[in-house]
Image (cartoon, one colour):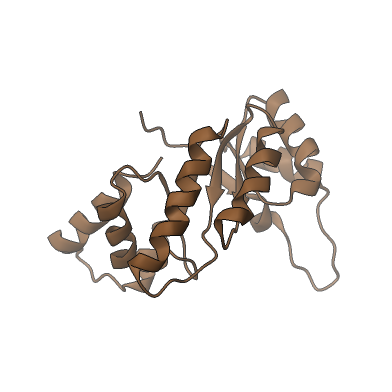
Length: 184
């Protein structure tokens, strides 16, 4: 069953001030908790122990992010994420490759799916700009080939990238629903 979890990305908590002043990690996590988020998305595994301990203590969860460019890139990430425990709701894969054809993508997606079958944490592929899933139609072709593919939907990239006009056409609405129906 699908459930909407709203996570704050840790990278979005970076202040990026010219003076380099940043909030401490614990303060960032407290701000996220106090704002009512379900948890966080993070990719800096060097601070995963601190993040996951805070989330567990506060009844929150996480999405761990990774950016593999091959099947082999994903193997060690799955092992590491499994060590974080049940606080990690899922592993979010932003496919860091840009195949020109669906045929080029199929072996990689099949490999990731094989790894996901044995993983102790669900593995989702994110719809995201500058990734394999950057194009709505390419991603729909992936869903044609893999109808049960679990996605994490970062839908804004499609709306902006395709410049949907207002009001949203029935055709575009239906296309987006195909993506949403596979979002976990």
